[in-house]
Length: 318
Image (cartoon, rainbow, N blue to C red; front, top):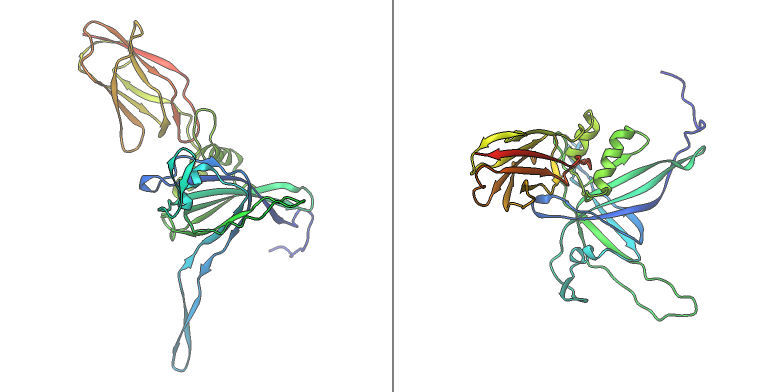
């Protein structure tokens, strides 16, 4: 073990600021499929509670401490909030531009960043991405006052309680922190594509086990189509056949289309397997006989923000 050194150059770290707030309303099944930017976010104060020692005595002495469960809470300060937060704050629209309060509140997730600074790089040393899961906002006070000679914007605030999510191998948690100075840059970039979205791919909040798999694994494979049935240029295909397409990664979005070689789009139904990698495209009615059809693989993107180059595969019916 080397000798301890205090206050070495570059080791005087601190944390400051809050920015890049993102709201993720919770959907059915506990997923957070769509994020929206939270403009005007001024503060997030994390306030864990619980984890209190409950002493147990035996033989007239302190025998042990039993620690109570820990709860994660927070408070948010902001000058405004996204429209999507209204349902999280107990509001509902009864007509365009008309809202009412005291309605059921919706759970949500939240992401925000803080800066990591040191004595050499200042606040450009790095950053932390903070994620909060299963949050519920309590009713908040809004104070309105007359506009004086020095107008001030109203700052709103909300108290949050949380419900933890499952983390395999660990106790459930409602908070997760990603440190840019300790995370592989390529894997961090993959995570940020998921959290913040990219062209054609909506932002979403991944659960802790997915984040761990990205960081601990080799990183996502480049998106590719593994197989397609019927195969490209196949002939004598039954007119009642479905098209089954398998991808190597879980797919987030697609606009796959079946059409005749003449450009007539075929009405179809689409079904994904549980893993989100195998798509079955079933024509609503039988295809025409002795006709060339094209399966246009367009608009395909995976959960890691990767896109597949547009391509068409053809087959001919019997």
